[in-house]
Structure formats: C-alpha cells, structure tokens
Image (cartoon, rainbow, N blue to C red; front, top):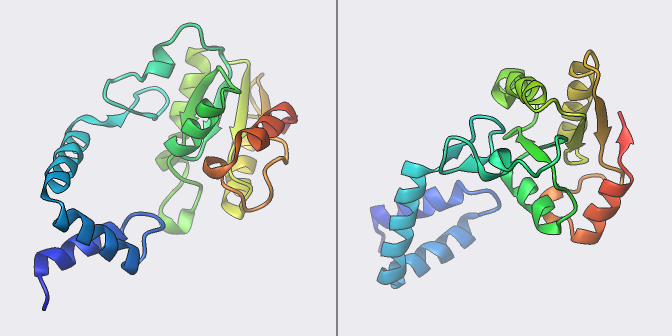
Length: 195
C-alpha cells in the first residue's frame, strides 16, 4: 500500500539536513497521524515562505528589510562573520558577543557554484564601511571548507585598515559552531587571534 502524496512528503522531508529516509518517514507519519499538527505546520511553513527573507545589510533571516541586530544602536561596531543563521543563534544564545553579524549562507565552493558573489562578500565590505567596523571576527567552522573561506576572507580584507581575527581553537577540527556549547564558544571568543 502506497500513497503518492505521502511519498512526496517523505521526499521533501529528506531534503532537510541530517534527515535520512527512516527519519523522514517517521516525521511524515507523525504529520499524517495528527491532522491538527499538520494544519498548524502547513500554516507556519506558508507564513515563513511568504514573510521571512534576508536582512538587506547582514543577510540574517528576518521578517523586515533590516534585522533587529543591525538596527540596534547599542551593539558594538565589530562584525562576526558566520556560516549560517544557526551559528549566529548559537553565539547569541551564549551571550558572549554584543556586536553585529554577517551571514555567508555557505562556504566557498566554486565547483558547487558558491563563489564570493553568492556569499555576499561585496555586502560584507559595504557593511564594514557602513558601520565603520573596527574588527571582523571570522567565526567559521574548523572544517576544510571553513578554513578555505576564512583564508580567502582574511586575504580579501587585508587591504583595509581593520583588525581581522579568527576564533581560537577552542573549537576542535571538524566542529560546527552551531553545536558548540557555551563554554567552548566562550574559550574560542576569548582566545581569538589576528589573522
């Protein structure tokens, strides 16, 4: 017994990061078994699709043209560059940093079509100028892609009179900022170094 619509739901759920076929099926059965939840889930997905986009300054997710962080005057003028909004949320939740952010939404991967333009490097430079930033902190994963992107950014920003630092190696190689605990993030921020 099979349902084409159910199979399509499973396929769509599998597109989410970290979701394999079995987990996608388990989630799909939960959605189908609970009609109230399915209706609420569908409504929220539709609202997010229609109303959530990127901040015109930092590329964070927001329902407005400019996100709350970019529009808050009390934040410092340093800019913390992160891979994705989940990394930004992890740093914010740890309460260690009170500056602004820039979200790359990926790492440099020319073979996958992700170059400087897709990562918004020109927007980052504009943001640095706009806020007269005194420091750019590269808070990228310690993976090969994260390292390559950090290296590229440090070279690209070397012509500016701005301090470019990198989180200390409190993050072990291969670790993701999003999943780091507060203590690890704290040590990484305290031990950051000039690039």
